[in-house]
Image (cartoon, rainbow, N blue to C red; front, side, top):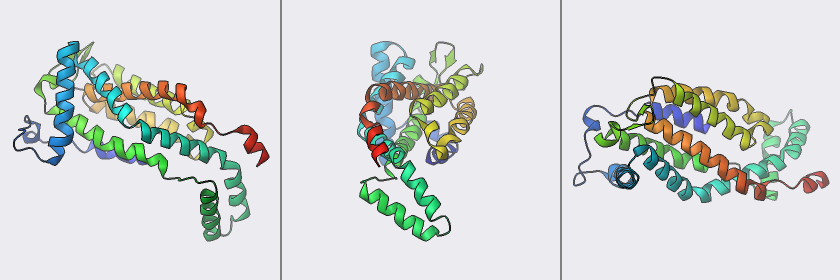
Length: 241
């Protein structure tokens, strides 16, 4: 739900024509100085080395994902712990179905007993929102990026062939599968809602931002493949509980 809200907020953050002018480092505010400009410098510098803004977006994506990796690990640990507690939570819901106040109290006791923070999964989303907005503004306020091309795409404009929006939607769905969202009945609906939202937004956003989203999805899937076993709930422990 928080990611859906974040994407809707992002869709309304388009800069005005005056705000699309290049950033003056001398007069830049906090947001521009410490988020937008560093992203521009990173994209320009890696483009000089690799000769392609498409590849420089890949480098930036990997670096950003590595920076937020500690939060991602915390999210994974919390998600797996929540999955392990699902049987007990269902028993509480059945037992106190007519007493919501008691249900909330017992649920909080259950979380405290197992040292689970249900809000921990929100941290990566909260971090990614300003990054996405800064990334968007870095693209639109850098003429070099805005006028660059990569493969069939003009990075400053939406993909007119719908190829990138389809890829963005598909990788969003696959990421949900890899992360095991289908195991959670409450999150299962978003496995289908989120790809549709991503397709619509990628159709409107510049290709550079949609490309960042695709790279981020692919990196996350690879990351989960290699490290998710560490955070899987112990089936034997679940059976004993």
